[in-house]
Length: 167
Image (cartoon, rainbow, N blue to C red; front, side):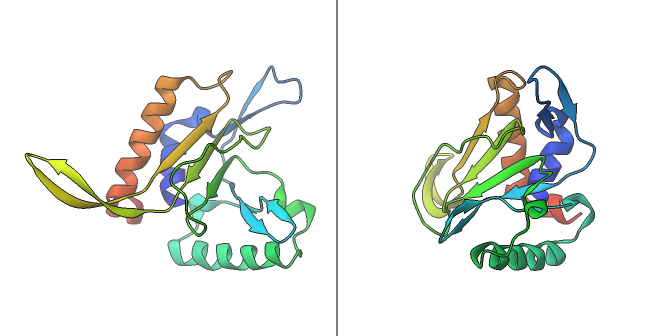
């Protein structure tokens, strides 16, 4: 979540929504991240608010708590409103890549698959690298492919150097 907020700060058009008419872009100055949670009753997307103002341990605890409430069917409607951007992870289930669907009125969603060690060819040799497959879906009325590529490139750089998140 912290890495995503770094990318949203760098690329503010991703931290936005379309109004009810679909004609006006509403830029957000806060960072409320929706987290897709698989439950016995289907997928729900509770929102973790003010991610930019919380530390890693606080976010981890809040994410664990909201996931339990989601699986137990104890979320209120307010718990699932007000998101700026959503993260959907299949890491616990498996799979390689998938195409997440944008959670309207948001304009983008990040899909995260299970990470795994893979050989990567670098300077004439194969080296083991931990690979985290990411998929970004976005509303083309707001974001074009070049912006999306820059967003995912930036996000990958942040994720690959944890110090950028911690500092």
